[in-house]
Length: 193
Image (cartoon, rainbow, N blue to C red; front, side, top):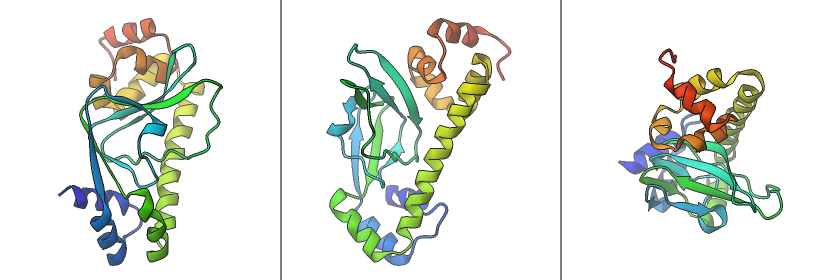
């Protein structure tokens, strides 16, 4: 059942060949994580095939002063496309927090070269996943620049309803670029859309 969900999400934009589907299904691995578990990205296996099969997570930057900045949220069936080689501020760490009990599925790193060899459609699939992530990041940047705090929060609620129920308010405020007290006032307004 999980393999079918994974393959359906992997081939959402581009149909998978029978060979790619069979190979992926054969080598696919799954790992479980507990709610509120946090890991630096260098301590977890994430590659271009990693998908959040169950649960939700948050990508965040922790500075040397132990301040956290929420960069992105992932929901079930999102691919965790995190490109290697990002330049981080000195003495900071990029980490992931699992907001609820989660399961990650992925093709192990040692099998990735075979995906490129066996299927001409795999690079196109990866490009589409990267494009989706870039579009989400671009839309969020536009939201930070153009929308006021209330509009950003309403958009957040429409896109991340489940996360709004399981994530701490200060972490959501960080993502929205507003003060936690402002978010608290926005949450208390009865006319949210």
